[in-house]
Image 1 (cartoon, rainbow, N blue to C red):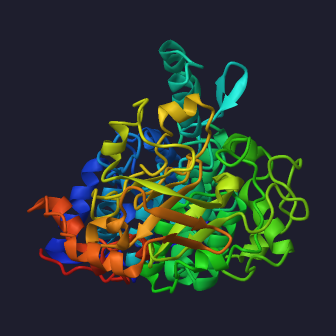
Image 2 (cartoon, one colour):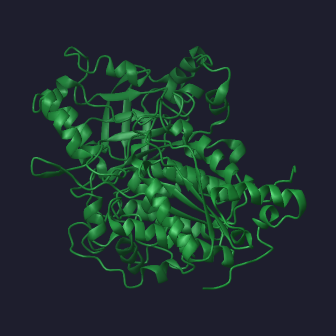
Image 3 (cartoon, one colour):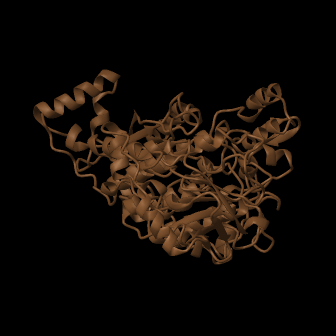
Length: 578
């Protein structure tokens, strides 16, 4: 084993200190049973774990951390595990997105404040992955992401069922009488039958794949199921690798380049990934000073077909994706077609092209070849502009109904998601299949936190009549497991006075996805008159984190990060107070 002792390491400002300071740092660490020899200048590796029973997707990460520790010890480092908060979308109210920035701040400060030379980031649920990447990028110490892996495929009545995606389907079946309450209750346990995050191509799976596409996660590691032994092998390998990265001084700033972000945007299109990747990638790019405009998410993907046939856009689930070759197979297809940059360096120390060389695709149903794709080029995320969303809005074409991509209909406006849900089952609700359901005040500042409420269920009376989709427009987000013709992330949001605040019942809304347009067919003079009548909502918060959030959160097109967190702050060792 290589001698990795180095008295110039960052951690030696603590453990190599002379006199009282060094004695304090070393002696208190030794109450955990460490011998004096571990403070000899070897790399100190932090294992940041978001394990929590309040975040079911992350509950198993304590076991994953043990595998990482084995790898760090094998490579001659000193592993030190520490907890971070866990932003689990399944339980947190009003939304986990409200706390993504708080978690990113915590991760950043914990890494900077402690005697660490590198870090392994253990995440699971969809906000924990970008939060950890954002925090680590702002410190810029060598870092490897290890996601916790998807659950095993759900099984119900002889068919595969997907987390999230089948929640919406079962809800519709319940409303239309196709399922009973008892059957739904039984299906709950069939849907989530192992540790891990959503096994659909929801946001958790998307962000795991995006982390791998960016080069921040070991090749192939995004897709191994949480309970597969190879998930632990991957974690152990990450522990070994991060020690080498410290020696090589391989930092996120070398990996997270403009080309790496372009690769991630294109990979997201190819896998039929979540629209939430737009928000998270934009925020992460802001942390490392990479210019990533909202329009990049449209321009870069127009030539990229959807290759992965997974729910919610397709048929299969992450377990199938893993066994079909996982993300390396997808990236190899894209590289072969000239749709990815092969040169960016990754956490392996090798390039994207080197990592995917020899990657195989098994079968043609789950991961389709580039020449006969699951969906043709141009079915990725569309970025819309118009007088209703001057700063942009997004729509996931692969999960939408083709006949609704060009649509004109009267608006039915609801000033909150709760206002819609209160009347959604009313048989006398004044809507038909042409109505455009408008849900507002669900943006970053307005809700607050920009919850996943945009794909509201269709009105019960239309479901019973056989209507399966309607155009819905919202300044909030949609779960990556959701589907439908839903326009999201309308910016500026209603709560800050965007044109979305001026829509009224009956106004004609015109959606033209091929033309990338979303507009209100109301003349400018009338909109100006309404603007004069509009008054901003009163601030609901006078203190605490939520006040901080509402005062400093940026709009969706900027990634909904805090403006004061843009750019990195480095890893300079804090001053010694002892």
